[in-house]
Length: 111
Length: 117
Image 1 (cartoon, rainbow over the protein chains, first blue to last red):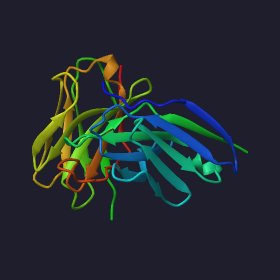
Image 2: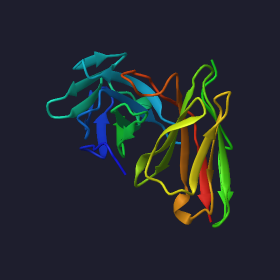
Image 3: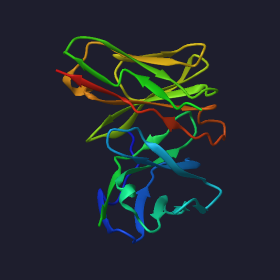
Image 4: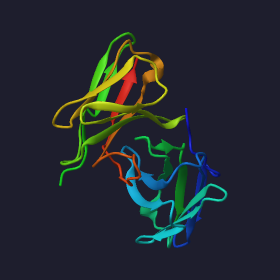
């Protein structure tokens, strides 16, 4: 099936450090992107989104960067905390009533 | 406002049986999407419904079907279950669904864990 690719399946960071999770998307027609966080036993939780007419968007401790030239998306988490440990998914949407997800990156926060 | 709810949360079936999963979207949301999540494949799109109409579907066999009711609640059905159907089935709702230039955020339910023996 269709997938959004991820560069790193597992990312380990020290508590307090910044985390960067990368994602390569596949469809140049995609104009909307979302990052989700999924904790064990739960459904994905919305973190932040960005439209294709933007290249950066900031939330609380999180920033999403979009580079349409190389079809690359990243999620930056500032001052990573133990509660940030989870699997992170990026999703692209080319419209057509669907979203395309990748296999996810596992973030491990080391105390 | 209540989130997306899915029932049941856990289900164990045997090969050849069929199963029906239910999803109640966030109040006011009219678009419901279903996904299958497995460790190796991530989230795979099954189908999307809006106003009782299926607007898009993923690459799944015809054994997977769904429907949406007038109150936006949705069900999905899997017939003739196979071992490979064991997965977490996730439902997501949004106001209008992704299309026509709208940026419509999806919110997920907790999922139904289906185990096929």
